[in-house]
Each structure stands twice: as structure tokens, then as C-alpha cells.
Amino acid sequence: MAETYDVVLATPFPNYNFFAHKMRELCGQNNLTFFFCNDTWVKEFHQKLQSREVEVKVLIDLTANQREDDDPYVVLAREVKRQRGTVIDDPDVTAYAAHKGYLHQQLEDAKVPVPPTIVVPREDIEHFQLTRQQQGFVGVPFVVKPAWGDSGVGVIVNAYSEEDLVTSAGQAPNSDAFLIQKRVEPAPLGNHVGWFRMFHIFKEVIPCWWNPNTHEYQMVTPGEMKRYRLAPLRNIMREIGRISGMKKFTSEICLHSDGRFYVVDYVNADPDMNPRSFYANGVPDEVVRHIVWLLFYEAMHIVKRGHGYFDDELMESEADRNWLQRRQREQAVN
Image 1 (tube, rainbow, N blue to C red):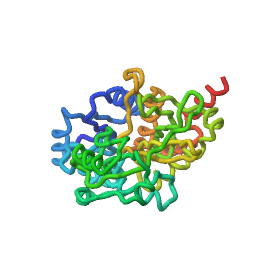
Image 2 (cartoon, one colour):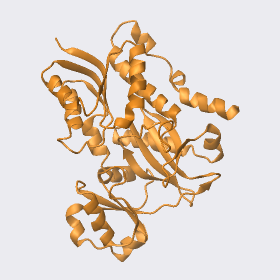
Image 3 (cartoon, rainbow, N blue to C red):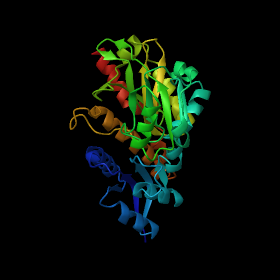
Image 4 (cartoon, rainbow, N blue to C red):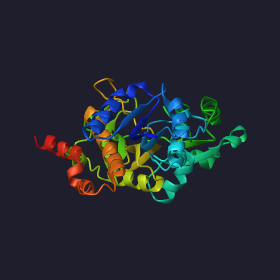
């Protein structure tokens, strides 16, 4: 008989132990079985899944290689999906949504504010030449970034010519397309600049100030949301979630010096989960804990669905769930 795991957390990143510990804690407190699948276990766990020695109800996938078909975490996610388990996020949806080239046109068509952009397929790079009209469209210098990639690999923020496009292509050999994008300049907002790392977790949006140079986070308070008129950030994120089909992701949004918002990084399918208490440029601990709760809460809904009286407990209001927003409001008052 197969051993059933209600929640499996899969990630190759050893610095996500804090996240895993909090998830294990919540599962233990609510009688859900939990397994942390890292590099030590991923291949063996996949073999046991294939042979039906184990069963997975919910897999929370914290990886970044969804377009690499032989990546062991992608293989695991697809096997869980094949066996009708729930994967957060669906690996096939992620592989599409995390591709900046594919998603760009959809966002533009839906009037999501994105910078002026030219998408160049890899096979066109050797002969690609920017026309004078294109140079006027994206400006000089411009930004070059791979359509598929992470951790800033292949991103050139001060690009001047087609040679920078060739350089980016060499640095990101797995990307099949590249974006040439107009640079944006964030507006000064008090002690901050208008650059935000936005978390989207099951339609709940958590805004953070983000410094693109130091990669340091700070929570955006309700008072700051009102003072700087940042309400459009939430609507933009929910629209990206609707278009992409993603449940958990981050985006980078810039409030430009011209007063307009621009989405500069569309869908980061592997949100940073390093807590500030362990890493100087980590995510505020209360944000990490809240994200763990949101993911656990969704997993519990899935695992406990159809368990009779317990269904009533799963119907708590959205207002009761938004612990982070309540805490922000309390801090703003005090």
C-alpha cells in the first residue's frame, strides 16, 4: 500500500530550510503529512512515485528550471500531475508563463503597462540590425534580457548595440529568444525609489519596496500605499495572474519618473524565499511566514476537501485570511 504525503515541498535550494521548517510546522499542527524533497531525495522520491510506493496529494514546487525537461524537479512535478495530484504551480503553465517572450504580447494586448519592447528570436540574432525607428522606440542605452532565464543571467542593463544582444545570447544559451527593452528610471518616493517586488500568492498581493542594486526588501505600509498612490500595483498583479494562470509568482514593477507604472519583470516563477533574519537582502520574515501560510492554507483546502464537517472550517472569510494586511494597518495606526 502506498504511503501518502499530503504536502510535499520540492526545491533544490538549501537556503530554503526556514521556509520548509515553517511549512512542516503548520502541517504537523494540522495533522497533514509532509515531506521535504531536496537534492538528496528527489530522484529516489520520483522512483517511488513511479512505482506507486508513495502518493502525493499536493506538491509545492519551488524550482526554476521548468523548461528543462530532464530537470529532476520538473520530472517529479509532471509525474505528480500525471497521477492527478495537485502541483502548485502546474509545470506546463509555468513553462509558458515564465517565458518573457511568450507573455509579453499577451500583457500588451491586455493593456498591462510594459516598457516598449522588441522580441528577437535566437535564430535572427546573427543578422539582426536595429533600425533607426527601433532605436527611437526603445532608446539608447536599452536593456537586453533573455526571454527564458533567472538570477539576472544574460541581463545587460546598459546595452548600446547589437553586440550586446550577441553577448546576452552567449551568456544564456538555453533561451530561444531575447528582449530589447526601453530602460525605465524609477521616481524618487521619500526614502525609496519607485521600484517594487510584488508577491502574488493565490490572488493575494503583497507589495514590497525593492532596491534593484542592493536587492534589499522592505514592506510597503498601507500609509505608503495611500501617500504615493500605489493602488494600481495590486490591480496590475492580479491582471498578470489572470493572464498567466500562475498562482504564486513575483513581478518587478517600476513607478517611472513620468508617473506611469511599468512591469519590468513579468513572472518570476520561483519567488525569493530567503528570510531577512538569515540573509541581509532577504525577504522580511513576516512576508515569508505569511506566504508559507497562504500556500499551506491552499494545500489544506485541497487535502481536506470532501471530509464532511471539516468543509465548514475551510469557508472562513477572505478578511480573516489577510493577516498580513491587518498587521500592516495596525502598524500604520501605531
